Image 1 (cartoon, one colour):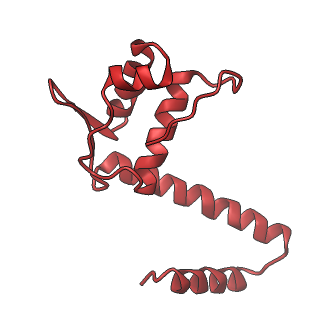
Image 2 (spheres, rainbow, N blue to C red):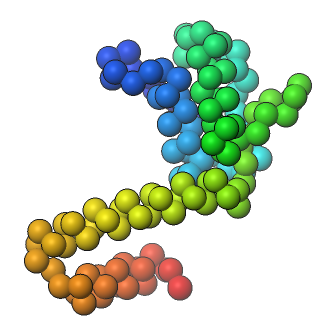
Length: 127
């Protein structure tokens, strides 16, 4: 897992860490039940405070992406987790909404838009 932090982005470091881990979980790059780096290890690698990594992991746990097993570490929850499913559904809705707005600007009919979606679904092997 590669995390890149920026001091100039205006986004708090813990938030950058949280979002990058969340993105890796949702994309499948980090798999279910995978152990995340320890708080100290991640802080050392990123040259930041352990408090910062603790806050990122705590928020990931509160949002349902990971679980902290006392004395063992922080593990990724399965994609079956209801909170992860909700996040994925929200991502789908946002992407479809953006596609609809683009279709309106391009004056694509609803029928043609649905046809495009079906073709893309077939191309991706979605059944």
